[in-house]
Amino acid sequence: MRKTLTGVLIAVVAAAAGALFAVTAIPLSGQAPPYRAPRTADGKPDLNGIWQANSEANYDLEAHMARPALALRAGPYGPVPAAAVLALGAVGAVPPGLGVVEGGPIPYKPEAAAKKKDNQDHWLERDPEIKCYLPGVPRATYMPQPFQILQSQSALFIAYQYAGAVRNIYLKNPGPPPVDSWMGQSSARWEGETLVVDATGFNDSTWFDRAGNFHSDQLHVVERYTRTSPDVISYEATIEDPQTFTRPWKISLPLYRRVEKNAQLMDFKCVEFVEELLYGQWRKTPLPR
Image (tube, rainbow, N blue to C red; front, top):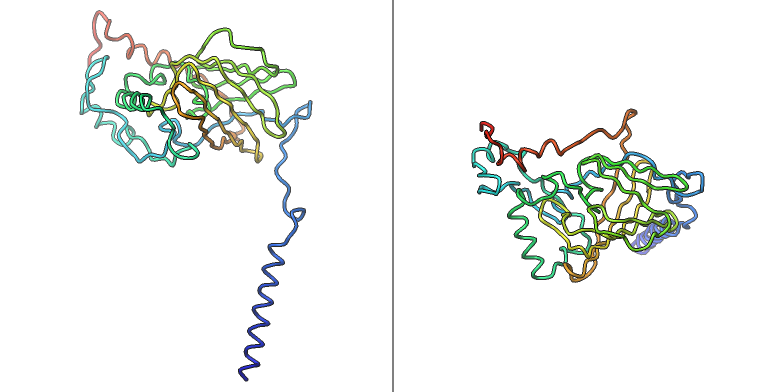
């Protein structure tokens, strides 16, 4: 009887092992093929559309817990009353995020890490976003507003809703940028299904997020846009700045297509929203508070 049971168990185990092997040994040819994006007239992957990030990256690229967004202290534009900060409630808080930086924390040099901490402590006074300055690269991509990619055989253009920022992306390298600017100079090439954008020529005035992460005018960004499904672009950006960081580092996040039938970029002329913040202290008659 014992031999019979043993034989049955051996047969069951052998059958299970055989089934497992059969499942794991399915050839790659039996799997679903990788997604292939629609093509433009010249046969390149079609990235046209309105896209938007859905992440906490604009608050802080690195992993972070929920925290207050404002410090209870005075700034150059006058005091920030505790009552005003507390009245914002949850709206005035930073939501938690897992972060989009690959491979650990941003590799700042020691002196740059101290400046980043000081930036974060003075976020309300220094963040270029608050003052409606152009967002720079890669920040323009993951701000909480949509942007539109316009792609043809001869041109590639990105329009951002925030502050009316734009990028004219050259399809042939035009050479060194003539001047440093907020959005830099971008040139692109195709590597299979991926659009690779090389961006240089930045000034040192933009930030990466609201947490004070910054760079110098030595910033070099290489972006990779890969359409991985009808409504998703996989976005990566490798950041290099030898003056600020000990090594290059990378962020990655998905971008989602806006699929509303009436999806479109709208006006966000934020300059008019910051005039009082920047120049209100010079009013002849201050506004009532």
